[in-house]
Picture 1: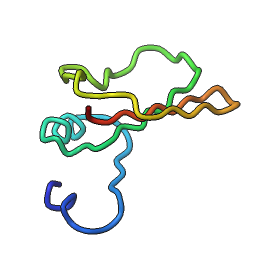
Picture 2: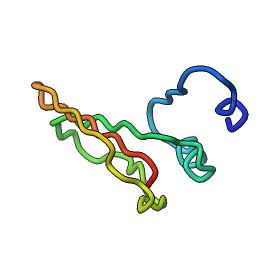
Picture 3: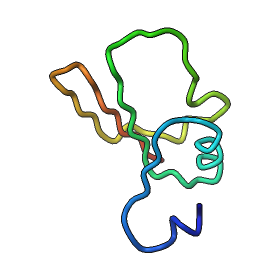
Length: 77
C-alpha cells in the first residue's frame, strides 16, 4: 500500500472499516478520515478506533446536510 500511495495520480479512497484500517493507521498511510454520521440508531456496532490512539488527529472540516447527515473530516495534527 505504501508503494501505491507513493505513485503519482489521484487520491486513494477506502470505504468501510476493519483490520485493513488498523494496519493503514499503524503504518501512517492515512491522510484523512471522512466520517459520515447518520441520525439513526440501529444498535451496537464495531468501534472503529478500538485499540488505536486518536490523540494525533484534529478536526479539519465539517459539512452539515438538511437531511441531518454530518460529515466530519479528520487529519493528522
